[in-house]
Length: 367
Image 1 (cartoon, rainbow, N blue to C red):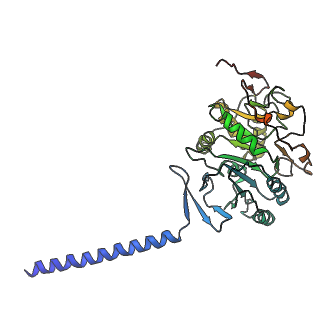
Image 2: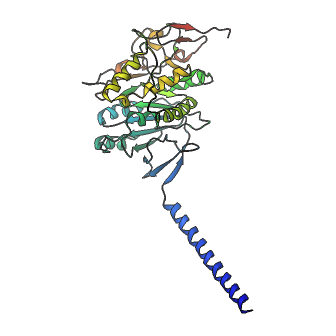
Image 3: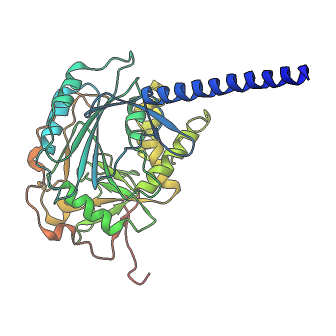
């Protein structure tokens, strides 16, 4: 009898201790969740941690993990910068009068750190001081130096069903106020095609990837497709960009893999960078390899050839001093498109395709 009582008392004590432990763990977890940084799901296997300092500044704490934005907008501009405060200001000023036609927008300014993980104070000050009346603006400071690869490849992770139009823009590009109108029209017309990698604002400096000479479409049409991306203002197709990110992060772990495409001028550039140890300044080589393997084309506006004028660019590259250019920036904003006509986005079929060597083929209407 006494043994049974002792056993019952022991079980009761164990029960009380267990309950108290569970209560403690529950309270600890609740407090921890309230104080923990917000977790943003990237995909099935990746999670990035964002410290939300205030409404205008965010910091991603896991480099190498593509970033997913918390809300959907019709148009998002991902503006990449490093330590060119004046250049950043020039590009920001060009965005003030952007024609959005009533659509929603967001501006994401991404600032990289130097190799010592220091942030350029003037660039940060310029970014935080900018007030954009057209949509929400956030300043993202990389937690460590990520370079060109990290700035381009990991600053936007499309969701699986994303239809968002996202422009990846460097701080040495000046866009036309009509660039969204063109991008949206191009996306709406071409996005259903499986051979499209994305849409570019670039119309100057478009050259053959094989051989020499400029590239443009026939003068009878305001748009053409080219096997090479235009990185001077590029809006990737979401599904293609997501697949490319997964492929890139897998292939980059393979030291023996080289993103060479035979006979391309860009491959020779990349190899030259390799001899100097600066190949990480050319993210485009990886995208060229990937899109070439998938037989994808980039949508270009053909307005200079179509209108037989040079001052109708959707964007211009100012050649600011940096990794690839030196000297004074160009004063070329006079080349931007300043007036709009519906004919600029009257995309009829068939459309012309331009190959790496400049060969132009016209799609068969009957197919």
